[in-house]
Length: 124
Image (cartoon, rainbow, N blue to C red; front, side, top):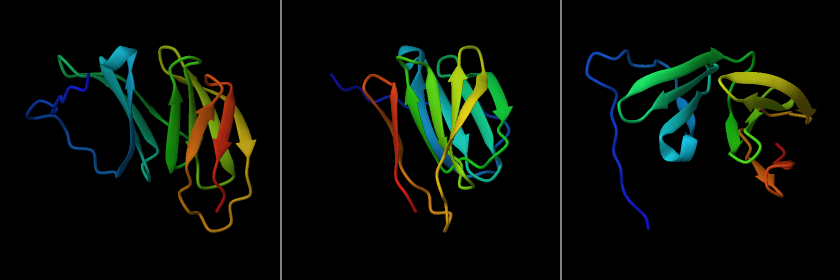
């Protein structure tokens, strides 16, 4: 059954100056992961109580992401040369790049198929 939850960072928490592009639930809904476009920041927070689990700055922008809880892989449409693949156990670790020719720097969809072992993306 669907259940609505709302969460807010505690008062006094610093606001992020970047544009949040993606949000994914982690750890069976106990945490979220958020990617920010121009700052290249990727964060994970526990929802209740609200606290930061980890933060990393990627080497490329975050246009779009897809998360596979089965394989613990994250796809990142990087707006430069394709899709970056990260494995996330305790924090993101770069695995490889899936090269795609990007001409206009449009944000394109990325997603997983076949229980997280097949990556798909749009083209600009």
